[in-house]
Amino acid sequence: MNDAPAVPPRIEVHESADALATAIAGELLARLADAQSSGHEPQIALTGGSIAEAVHREVARLSDGAEVDWSRVVVWWGDERFVEPASDDRNERLAREAFLDLVDVDPAKVHPMPSTESASDVEAGAAAYAAELRSFGSGAFDVLMLGVGPDGHIASLFPGFPQLDVTDQIAVPVTGSPKPPPERISLTLDALNRSKAVWFLVSGEGKSEAVARALAEGTDLHDCPASAVHGSEETIWFLDRDAASRL
Image (tube, rainbow, N blue to C red; front, side):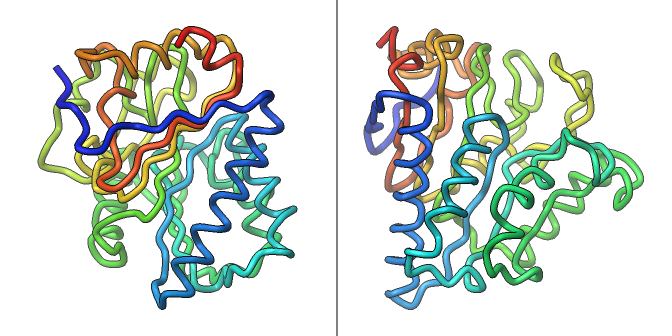
């Protein structure tokens, strides 16, 4: 069973996927600006998926009016598909096209997960990313963004998979993914839970059952991994009306 979070989650419901993406992007920019105004260099972890792409596009659109110095933001990923760098399946490629290439990021502060070109295999890729986080991570993401699958998976941690029980690693290889591509790299639950703020980004009626299960009391993390991730300071479920329809 999943332990209850120290800080109860907040649920934000927006009328549409577009309104949801705009709200999340605005909140992210505000958080980054506030962190930088206090002298802190924020570290964020990105996710993939259609709603994340919409958020990224809105971040790029709204960045001109925001007081964010993107050269002082450190960027990570919660999971990645272990494919070639140019693949349309790469979360990194989509994030770069949607916003990272459009704002003034410092390339040295963007930490993509290894690809088939940079690692000999998925196991080596996971080990390399763990080492990179140990070397350049702050120990806690300021904001971790996660999508949720219809089966309740988050990052590339799927229901029933043994990676859910790994407690001594930062990143793990995933093989035999129930959705393609089959090989992936994912941060572990322990690593994801080292986040100050966890934001779930969920859109669509097809995710509504997973949302309800994740937020229900007593849900087993092996059945619904999304139930097992909480921020130390804040957990927000950003939903559109369809995703929230079973709450």
